[in-house]
Amino acid sequence: GQFSSTKVFEINQEPFNSAGFVQYQVSRVDSLSHEILINGQPLPGVDVHHTGHDTDNLVQTHTDVIPASFFKKGQNTIQFQRKGGDNFLIHHVIVHWRELDPS
Image 1 (spheres, rainbow, N blue to C red):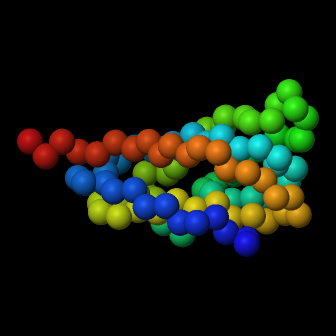
Image 2 (cartoon, rainbow, N blue to C red):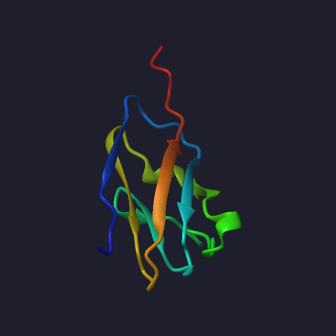
């Protein structure tokens, strides 16, 4: 399909007003037009970076900034959108954010 499955992550407290980031491992990426969506909003700039198909660089790790305004308390989602002709693979994804201490 054109979209990966949607994954949910929970933010238990009010998100801190600072950017977060996503780290991801991908392979077989030829196009720079793919998007990463947080709560349905595409991240600014180039999201999924070119990796090529060489065996020496099969899996690459990249980081992208998530604007603070994209986060909300409660359930949040992340999803990849394919916008090119390649069939890239998503290996691992980690989302980082800060939330306010309730005390």
